[in-house]
Amino acid sequence: MPESYIQNLFAERIGGAQYGKSQAIYKFEKIKRAKRAAMAAHPDQEIIDLGVGEPDEMAFPAVVEQLCSEARKPENRGYSDNGDIVLKQAAARYLERVCGVKGIDPETEVIHSIGSKAALSLLPAALINPGDVVLMTIPGYPVFGTHAKYYSGQVHNLPLTEQRHFLPDLDAIPSDVLKKAKVLVLNYPNNPTGASATPGFFACVVEFARKHDIVVIHDAAYAALVFEGEPLSFLATPGAKEVGLELHSASKSFNMTGWRCGFVAGNPLLVRAYGDIKDNSDSGQFLAIQHAAAYCFDHPEITQQIAAKYSRRMQGLVEVLRQAGFKAQKPKGSFFLYVQAPESALGKGGSRVAFANAEAVSQWLITEKLISTVPWDDAGAYLRFSVTFIANSAAEEHGILQEIGHRLTSAKFEFA
Ligand SMILES: Cc1ncc(COP(=O)(O)O)c(C=O)c1O
Image (cartoon, rainbow, N blue to C red):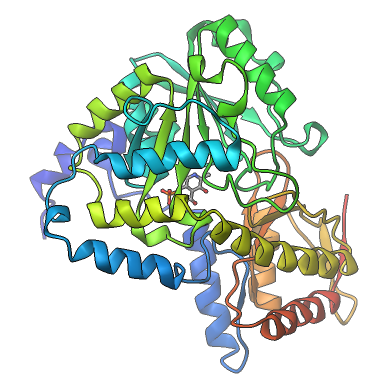
């Protein structure tokens, strides 16, 4: 078939006339392919999937009930645009009760999102002109940066390293970059490192933002999933509301990834701009879903129960990985355990396999041990293990952890 004229019409931002022709295989596709091949080679064994970035369970029954009753109300049927007051008020209550953030005005300082991903994809339209720089952490969740580049913005990467407890070094940003920097995107508890921020770090971020006229977007997708202490909101930092926004989501905290609901809160001027872009992009999340999410934000004990499960699993996984030689340390929150990747492994017969990077380790673990993880090679070689594997009881969970230990200790890993 001759090539369609459509091929020449694609925008440069997605590859122009070359769109779709690249043979490059991306990380998650490589993982998928390796999993398929391992399953075909070992049809009698199960893959243990520690690569999944979303909860293993459904939303709680009371939340599903709330959705059903709200879905029956005729007044909830239509376009919700930027939403009614129900979720806004629940969000303000949640920020005060769970995160100690007082004084959020639900009318002017909160608007719902169709998930944080959607909010991160919309916000660049409000802020980025060609040539503007966005400061993004790597490894990290790239959506804001991707869209900033669509608007001809530039991304300056801030590496997250173990030495700095996976907090970016704001003092290391070159002055010419700072002059053009407009936005700093942060995410704590962090995907993929599992690291948490501290009030002191957030105070420095506010000072930095004020000094350099920078907007701070704090993506708090894992905010309340903490294993110790209280959830830490950026908005709880004195002065934070003058410099930025925080994004919360029902996805991970309430097992509602597919429901697509969260909220953006903080600086009223930024919230308004987000609302203007959003209003021109979507017609709002279904009010029944917004109201069910509002119910969740008024029931933070749901998140506490979910976090307790992840904490228990995390403890078990840390022990299992340590026995296999990994330097695993239990994070303070999220559901991610981020560990240094081994340099090599000795198999049963004593044969040594050297790994070029974390991706090679991840492929080897899938192929040889039927364990799936996500590799990160952006700032050192690391593997991300998620404790969102499917297990329907504590006993099943224990069995899976034992099986992980069994599979891993049959090799001897060597580390730098
Ligand atoms: C750091 C981070 N931000 C945002 C999201 C997306 O969240 P949502 O489901 O609310 O769009 C994810 C999902 O994996 C994430 O890891």
